[in-house]
Image (tube, rainbow, N blue to C red; front, side, top):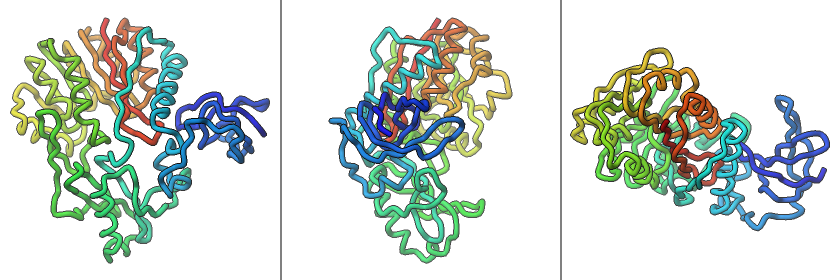
Amino acid sequence: MIGRVKSIGKGGVGIIPSEKGIVLVEGVIDGELIEYEISGKRKSVLWGKPVKIIEKSVFRVKPDCPFYDSCGGCNFRHIKYERQSEVKKGIFLNNLKKIGKYIPDFKIKTISSPENRYRTRTIFKIENGEIGFYKRGTNDIVEINDCLLVPEIVTEFIKQLKNSKKIKDIKKGEIIVLTDGDNVSALLRERGKTNFLTKQKEVLFKSSDFQFIFNPLNFIQSNLYMLDKMISVLEEELENHKYDIGIDLFSGVGFFTVLLSRYIKKGLSYEISEENIKAQKDNLELNSVNNIKVIKKDIIKTGISAADIYLADPPRGGLTNRIIKKLIKNNPKKIIIFSCDSATFSRDLYYLSEYGYKPIKLKIIDNFPQTDHFEIFSVFEK
């Protein structure tokens, strides 16, 4: 079969209209004319496999990773980086329109990143002594000598580990590695137990004029080069304002909480993970923050205190209408959301708009080059 790729959708797949319906094909670029064959049907959706690129996009490049065709990590290495940003913006705008019922009347800016060696935290899989990542679409391990997404210090660390008898004897497990580009902290997780593989158990990160202590089990923003930029984009919104009460709803180890504390008289920090709460209290003390009370709280199941400003960096599932109802009940002046999923964000935007809160700022933060993923920064006001 022959068809033209109309656009790129979530998951980085090409969308091709055909007589049989929409066909999804991996490894293509919007605008390309391709020959493909139907490879299967999942949840009533047809999937195709490219056979030949008849008309190549000017944005197609040879992938610079030898594991690209098999590893399930990256899915955009065949696309020039400058085009990746436009493709991601297209995915975002499409979700805003279809799911959020919203078409922005202002330009959405993209904050770009270096293309490689950006990962702060990486989870490597181990199986029968082999270290790597899952093969695309399977649970089989692809052994990786050098992942281009991780800093070189991590590559060297993994190479040394491969020669370790302890690693060669492991049937199934994972290695969690944390780095600031100069230091490495890593632990082994096997059979429900965790053990450090490095003497260094924590890494000190410096961002803007703040300092943060992380260990490999803590949540951390994925891109080493974008930490300062994420702080900056938030500070640009907060500066020249002062709020009585502010609440960080999914506060993690306090990465955004520390900055929020400067622009509120007092505040609350909600987090459900004990590991993150411990680190957050250390980070608040490290940055001389004394106007924030940290509370262990699952905001899905419990109430949310009133505040003038809410800050949220939720997991991929987003805020959900259930949480949004609790927020708007308190009539906040401002709601700021960082989101790593454009589909669930668009759903949340729809609900917020229904309650009278409109987006006044939207930005794409490209935390995940070489993949279809990206971060969204947004500000909502009545």
